Image 1 (tube, rainbow, N blue to C red):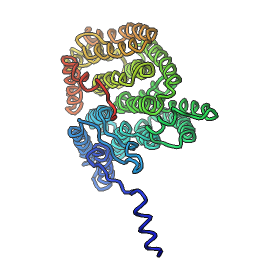
Image 2 (cartoon, rainbow, N blue to C red; image 1 turned 135 degrees about the horizontal axis):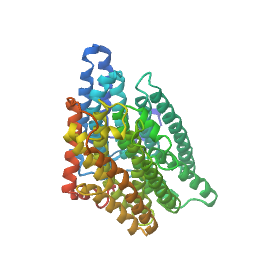
Image 3 (spheres, helix red, strand yellow; image 1 turned 60 degrees about the vertical axis):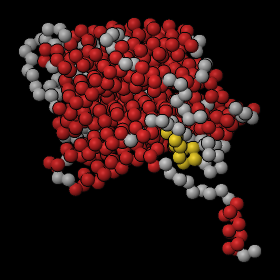
Image 4 (cartoon, rainbow, N blue to C red; image 1 turned 45 degrees about the vertical axis):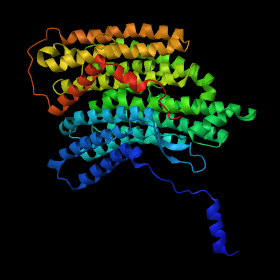
Length: 510
């Protein structure tokens, strides 16, 4: 047999390694990344006076990327699959992926609108800022579609590494530099621990694909059981850090205070979505066999996180510099505790409980980004960012005050913020259905505690202002961001079944 004949026979017998790519499925991620590269290159050729156009290119790119989710709304598309096992794919665009990608890209779009003015006024380097924001958004959009541990970790780091630089973007600002360093060091440590966990899981199962890992963990040899349990526990650390779950929360307040306000809002929503998405994928899809380990652990983390976050928020002094941002930071830690509840509940019932976390995350994204947008607007004239600076805001900026009041009532779960109440009831029910009555009681107590600081801030908006108010013209991009988030929150409060329709039933491809 000649060498050519042998090669032909081997080629006929071996499975093809050439894969077809579903370009429509990966379009949201590709477009976001491509626009980031366009902005980076364009920055080299644009004169300084034309740099603001980079912001509008970024806004347009994020809008197009968000629009490409419409053809994918039916879900259940997959690409980059193993030729020997078509069910094991690295990228899956199911209902869960589409919901989280919409949250990420729409949230990044709102962040970009608020950033247009912030970049100009703070004189931050425009090219670097927009490239880093788009790169982080691309990584965050890739993460929910990732279905192997390698892609999951890469997406996590692509979302995180640009965020470090964005936090420290205000050059010469000591708070910004300290925040970036603290965020970087703690995040890198958490990622290193997660990578060790992934290596343990791979050593145990011989696979990185989540579906194959799940199958092989069902029947782990006795001598490898301890290694597998250690791998599961360590893998969760990096994602728990991103969610700001206790005890991985210590970076949050200082990072939010040191970061530009649009980036603080971005981290509070998109950064948190990255962590929860990763937690959901590794627990519910990859590690169901070890639900007896991660279920109780996440339940305890949820209770500790919501309690510590709300307790710290209550203690914020209204006259302390940056107290408004610190309160929103601690509030986001408390909200993270609520978001953890359905993930823990999935260990005790079925994985459809995850829909409660997705529903709550969608509500939280709209109202929290709205609150940070109003904070960015107020900070233009009152840069100390104190809660007391919001006294009498209604007399100066009625639209901003009414919007912020509505956002705070949504976060508190009070009418007319029906969507906040609806989301909390959904999470509460998931805990009760899973038999976690004690966790439901802890959540109810924390909701009552949170009412104090949300209502205190809301009441301050309508009190008689101290001294004369000097009205200033609000930048229209920030106004658009506030209006968009307010309209979204109002619509969802009037029709919460919109979110229910998206998050009910099986979110994952079968």
